[in-house]
Image (cartoon, rainbow, N blue to C red; front, side, top):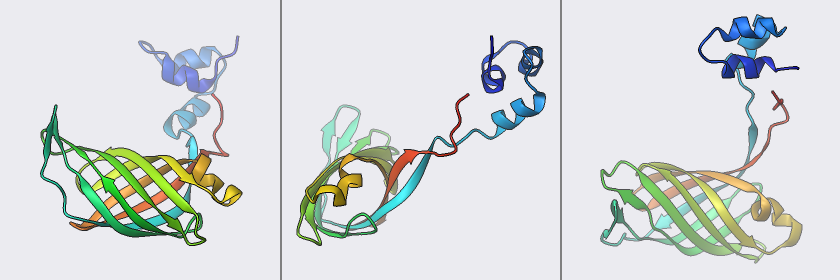
Length: 183
């Protein structure tokens, strides 16, 4: 029977994991190194930066546990190695929890890439009023393989309010890390 040192170092509670691992032939050095510096399971590749212009928000709509605020996206631009485009319109409708510290962001936007291909984006995430981490759930865009990473990829974004009327979004493609090892 073979147990990885990482399994033994992280799973054996109640008595010394190092002693137990040594009993199974794992070195103390291996356990310490693996437990203190876990492999990063994914890599991020920069795709784009979007500048969104916001219109005036609606009055808060009461919902269970907080409020919903509709914020129209009036315009915007997207630039980067994956796409250059113009955002024509959209809506952001964050759900603000009752204590006001957390927002569950929901964003829908549409526009046209610089080559004339139309697109729509659906995005959701969580954060505070100034910054959120979101996942782009669905990008619908033509253009064949040119936009494959946007259509099929797992995309994370950082969303930062730069002013009351502007939001800055950086998008990243998530891929498995080449250095991830199995325990």
